[in-house]
Image (tube, rainbow, N blue to C red; front, side, top):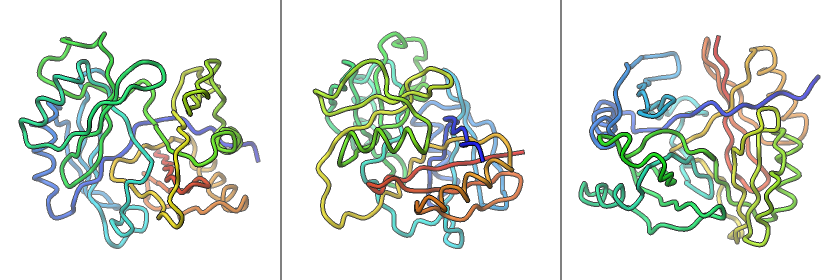
Length: 266
């Protein structure tokens, strides 16, 4: 088979099943997002928000009976799903006033700044600042997906670069950040930078990441989606079975236990 094309396509922010309606209200109010609708689906409850800049944010209830959506083994790990804000300092002041726990900002290798917030249900979201967006959406603190939406911690940077090239088709960006312990990976087909890999110290026996903010890659056809699941399993990678009907999803893990998610819909 030809290697599948994994294309970034948004993702899910997971929320407690028994607090789903409360979570929908929280994200609308605290984030300044416009609710487009909710749905009860074969894989559980979902809510859809139009992001002020571009794109759609999706909430998904944890489901105890579905491995792909269970809260069992919940662990944020070193796997971050990143969103864009126009002014990080103002966003952090706002969230702290709302009782939301926030980390201190850090400077990324490209000079931008990022910070984590603890959203509804204890879910970690990462915010990245793009000052060109400052003031464009005054009623929203989180504007769209970050320009580099995926940020992963890995134990051996060079090995991870090779692994992500082989299995996700990501290529190393022309800009070298290795002196800062980072690699920037790009979607080589579309030519845009999609993921930061950061070398971090791993704790022996650290559990696999099963975070609450889950970035997804899209595979366009159902046939390619099913073949990708089989191919990854045949490569010895830990892969879940696919779930769903007209929407289907599965997840797999990189060698450092970072969870990667895939969906298709038709």
